[in-house]
Length: 115
Image (tube, rainbow, N blue to C red; front, top):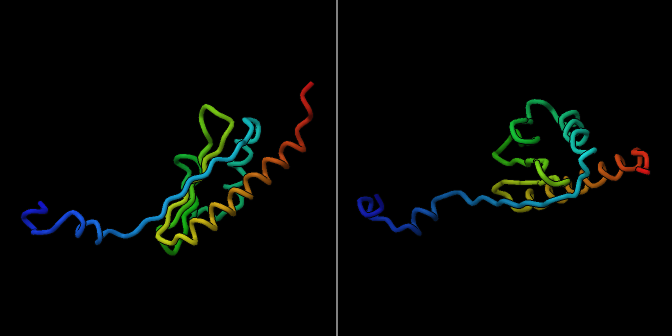
């Protein structure tokens, strides 16, 4: 197809939009995962959410989004951010990392110590 169009792969790639993708993993005990997902759903407008795999928080004005995905086999939560704006990605991952860590710490304060 590129030969027919007389274009190089580099030329085709240069026409694609730049997408910034960043991930971060946060420790989250099994006992706090469900409460964390519920908290995120309750604190964001429903029209900005997709609840297929974890909680995906979409920005209404562009294609930027953050996915909070609980790990199926480890006591972890993964944060995935995607946008064409690097600053938005960095700020959003930092913000949600702090929010998740704070939520987990509060949940652990309310859990009775195991004997």
